[in-house]
Image 1 (cartoon, one colour):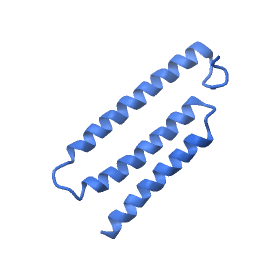
Image 2: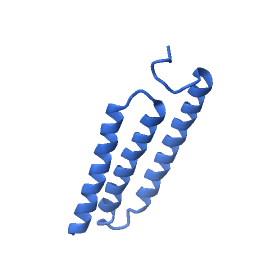
Image 3: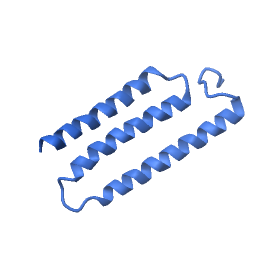
Image 4: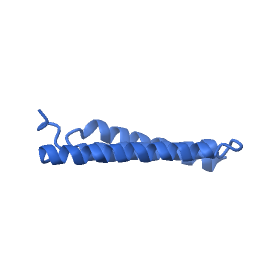
Length: 95
């Protein structure tokens, strides 16, 4: 019981560190995408320990991972498009 609470707190800490990184560093698109992935990792850790206590809902984790992978591939394709059209991923040069 205590170990799952500690792991849940670890997931919350990872999520909030990713959120703080997202708020503090908004100059580069790549760093924002990496902080979003850190937030998704924290959310996944919290979901794993929430679902492990319930019965038979492990398939929800696969749906969540599928959505995270789709989100990351969309973000990387937008990053490639912006770098090809503007030459870098600075938000200040996109006028």
